Amino acid sequence: MMKNIKTFTLMGLAAALTFAQPVSSYAAWQTGAGENATRWWYDNEDSTYASNGWYWLDGNNDGISECYYFDNNGWLLTNTTTPDGYTVNEDGAWVKDGVVMATTIKVNNNKKSTVWTSDDDDSSSKSSSKDKSDSYEAAEDDDEVDVKDLAVDDPERWDHEEAEKFVELLNEYRAERGYEDLELTGGDAEYYANIRSMQIVDYFAHDVPEDNDYIEWNEYTNEYIVKNVVSAEDAIRKYKSSVGHWNGLMGLEDVYEFGVGFYRMDNGKYAVSVNANEFNDDGCRYGDYIK
Image 1: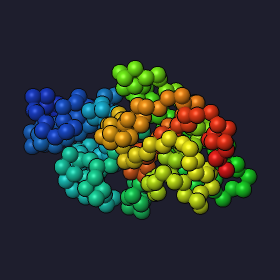
Image 2: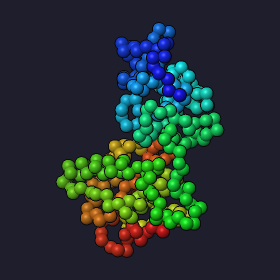
Image 3: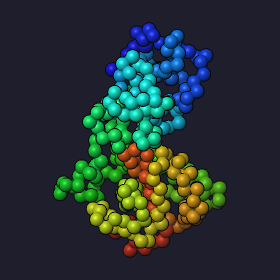
């Protein structure tokens, strides 16, 4: 439940105190006063503050949110185990196996995440606004659903905005080399790339798993895959770190089908698949490889 800051008598603003931790130097994070001068709370900037549970917070406005637990009085828990059994590090961020759980899902910092209880599977990274299952998993047993009709741009899993941002960034680098812009063609190419981004989470290889219900392997495609990235910018950095992959992306030309899939994994990060057809042959169009 949100509390009004005016009733929070134990806390005060300590603008003069330097916060040494990563979340510190941003206006919403505040320190207590007196004996609580080393403790932290989060000002929602609407006369309320975070309290009594989990919150996804992008405190430094870098587009990436981490999850923090606040007690009933609004104090951030740090370097401990939360009442519902999860681990938070010295900055207060939720960690699993030493890795900070993060998401680029746009969330409202004024809303508490209510998805975690002691019965939840801590292998999943979720936000308070996400309560639907993966649309493919939910539809697999429904004989009336045609896989071609499923919404692979569903923001629950597939982030089309990140895909578009990736192409914009890629084209900036291509322009520096004098290459023409690439454009997402949508349709079958987008569908194929989205499915591939989902598949590489568990099967990180260029050949398509034979026992899947969605697509067949298109041996003619130019495919570039990466996973465990947090944003389009991060995906660009990963591709740039491989000379072969980066030169391949730079060298794409005469592209008539182009799709980019950003699939949100259970840890909140993305798996990315870039798929392009460069020559006009009806025998290798992506639509021919969709089941």
